[in-house]
Amino acid sequence: MDKKPLTESDSHYDHLEKMRVGELLKNINKEDKTIADSVEPTIPQIERLVENIIPRIRNGGRLFYLGAGTSGRLGIVDASECPPTFGVSDNLVIGLIAGGDSAIRKAVEFAEDDHDQGWKDLLSHDPNEKDTLIGIAASGTTPYVVGAIEQASKHGLLTGCITANLDTPLASASQYPIEIAVGPEFITGSTRMKAGTAQKLALNMISTAVMIKLGKIEGNKMIDMQPTNKKLMARGVDIIVKKTGKGRKEALDLLRKHGSVRKVLNTFSL
Image (cartoon, rainbow, N blue to C red):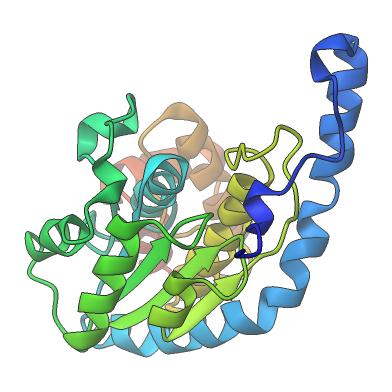
């Protein structure tokens, strides 16, 4: 009999329905505290993937995330946050989910079981050998994701994955697998919990490290962010004031005129 995947292992807790609310929350938090420790051993795996993504993007490549369910939604979240945070094009980091955009809000039955559809979805973006595809699947067996990674590798794309199981078909098909063994979920098999959080942490590390090395951060400030609301306008003004010594009103006027912190700072000899 095949060994049960880590993500399907029985929870360390039972009779959840009999626990008090406070007890439930404390136990969920207890499990959550283990996630960062599970991610730490995979940092070398993440590093190798990031180091290979950077030159491809510098050479005109793009970064694709592809997944189903929670994994797909997490990829879309990370991709959608890159333009406002780092001032990059919407077409630089792209998230794809089994079942299409409607699956972002509502589950699409059996969409993840189509071995060929992931690659078909990617083909609509005209992928090429400069691009990178990261498949995200807690189980490491999702056909939609595995099939896309297999085809991407055959067509010369750089491939990586994020999974919460070890020795999976997805990891085997990926050039740079990231395998985060978070262990049993609080609710048996509910990978939206620990596995999903671990995937989010890995995605944060990948996109943030890539963007920093692409020069999208100066010091520790988001000088390329898109100031699209009052909070971000205020943040941009703070950066300009600290960098130039200008007053807040003048800094705000400059930011409104030029549209980005970087463009404002480029007008000064700093």
